[in-house]
Image 1 (tube, rainbow, N blue to C red):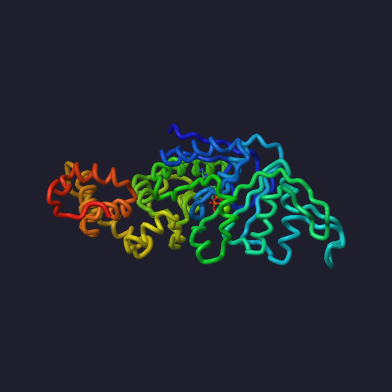
Image 2: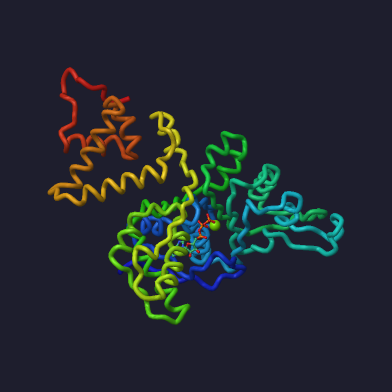
Amino acid sequence: MNAPVLTLAPHENSREEIRAKALLFADIRSQQLLAQAELVAASTVPVLIHGETGTGKELLARHLHKRSGRKGPFVAVNGAAINESLAESEFFGHEAGAFTGANARREGWFEAAQGGTLFLDEIGDLPLNLQVKLLRVLQEREVVRVGGRKPIPIDVRIITATHVDLHSAITAGRFREDLYYRLNIVTLRIPPLRDRPGDILPLAQHFLGQFAREHARPLPELAADAVQRLLAHSWPGNIRELENTLLSAALLAGGALIEGRHLQFARRAAPALVPGATASAHAATGGAGAPTDQLWQGIRQQLQELLDHDHPELLARWEELLVETTLARHHFNQVHSADRLGISRHALRTLMKRYDLLPPPAGARFGSAG
Ligand SMILES: Nc1ncnc2c1ncn2[C@@H]1O[C@H](COP(=O)(O)OP(=O)(O)OP(=O)(O)O)[C@@H](O)[C@H]1O
Ligand SMILES: [Mg+2]
């Protein structure tokens, strides 16, 4: 396996759920993401990390910090866990006597992250009044402690993360657009695990290796039916789910051969993650939301059946069917069809040419562009 494994330093202020000491990138899409991350790590521009739950947003943020060369600490704050009444003093600190109970002077998170990185997780959940204050700090590059007057200059790199589509939060009036543009100088999108299947088995091996080391046991092996099930699962909980599934399977299998029956998949549905572009394409094409897990399971099942038969050009046949069905569904409108397939119109036309689906050149039978 040639996947790069990047070792992370032992976490300062680490939380329980962050167990990994290494990031693994095997799939080409993950490697592309890593390359993007390397390009922006050393600058001080704010980065917004977008990804479903358990895709590794916090690990990526820690990696960016590590590669930034910044000497200060990495401080992680979860927007969803913020206590609104105390938040201002948590963020910006307070002077002694600023309010009842403020006995001593206290530094806020910004000051704690001085010279380092402040990671604001679940930024979409940050209360609106704090969004205003955060915007001001980003503009002024200084904080004033609650009950204080003196502005304190701040040198902090901001990394934010979200699993929700901030565009719809803006439309719904839950997120300030001006703050969004401040935070979103660079966006790193972590694809869900189901979209980077090349990561599944290397990560599985990685977690089993971790299990073996931590429990001082021989490395468990994966039986063929277990491999098949790992690859077929849709992983709504992404890498965290994969990690937990493998740890429980390794325990259930007594640390020896892990078979399909040892894998217990979470039944939770994937949280909606509709990036802006997809959302508008969806609206334009009249989509009814992301396909449910059940639908994917059904398709997987049918694929299994398909694979039981011999077909010399299975992939091409499958692609042709998908392109043809999409075009028919959109009355051969190429713009809408390309949107729906998530490819460029140029790429669609290449496929149409390949499968002889292009309309006749003169006196076109089908509408072409939208
Ligand atoms: N590339 C990776 N290589 C190895 N382990 C990873 C990788 N990405 C994520 N993990 C593992 O997945 C778990 C979830 O990662 P992390 O907490 O960073 O995800 P998250 O996107 O912040 O999740 P949430 O949205 O739930 O906060 C971690 O404990 C880590 O073990
Ligand atoms: Mg997280």
